[in-house]
Image (cartoon, rainbow, N blue to C red):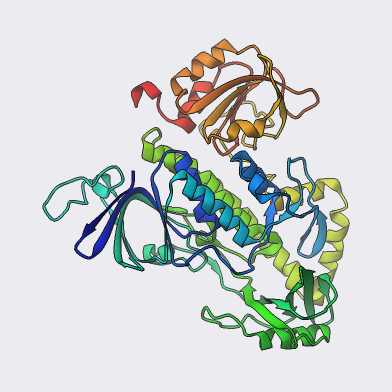
Length: 527
């Protein structure tokens, strides 16, 4: 377990993983690390979950992720809108999923949900703690003042990271085997590591404000002569967003715009005066577009906005970060448990850097369509025609929702006949238990955070069971029959990673042991 002791006036913590940042990405990572058996400390400067009205959209894949961990009941039934957009062009996001469309959940609610789960699982969350420095320690470092080596399960005696922070009761030194920066677009971890962060700074921006006491018509990406205007009223509060064509992003140095700036630009673009309203929150976000060259720097990794900076077009930023954390959590837990080698962490960069690059590219395209002046109207008209073609619509909807992700799970050295589910998420489908009983969903089988070998021939598949037996401590074996008419292939078997992606598929054991070793480490007998 995480250890806590005092050295003069400094509190010293030893743990497996230090997560910096308790936003959605950091809290999701903490839950996954604890579910995987790793000790985790989370530090964050804020006193609690955000109270600002930032991201408000959970896409289909993120909803599936929350469902796979049994978290949706606490959310109730949030409003769902099947229609999204691509650069302001309406786009039907409906795709085969247990939760198609986009779901309206305030970021503060998402953070509260994940914080509660992380706490229940035993994560050590330290609020009002500011990271000051970090240093990666080599193997054998970390001796105390008396010269004793080793600092417990989570210390740096086997190599790790030592971080200094300041908390409400004084200095804190945290010694961890790994550190993950989830501390946002202005990441302190990224600055301290001096991680290359190529891309471009903001050239244009959207101003936004939540305002009470105004009455303006709802606008969905309304392009007017002088700019773009968006407005939506919920529960008496109107969110306005505005961009004036040709107006460059301001140099703000971390400060937010004042309400007068928003009202001035809104009036120039729409002709309406909203200055009599009461601002509840004012913000500006630009079209900066940057991505870390590497998501892993030795024992320091990055997830969420610390790894990539983008305009939050279509609500993609929060969802991208949560999905980063969901990919990383089980892998890092397996490494610190000793059941997998460090090369498993390299697959985190390979998979999520690729997804991040694709998302940032689609956001750049959307920014041009959204904030460009009259010169982009021909491209917008063409896209409006193209999204009427279902193949185009499905491709764009899969990109925005996260449902279109397909990982290269076999690696460059393996070449097999490609199965349509290989590298894709396990579909939510009904299963008929081979030994009788109530039907169950595939999603329910992922709740434990373990791997899953799902035999769909219903006879127990003795050869598959025998092959997977040495990994039984980390991979559950289930033999069920797929419900008729569903998306699962009867008579076959699927090896599913803890994050729900299919890592192997076949009708016999050929290649199964290799896939088990690649994703779940060495044989349990060798641990």
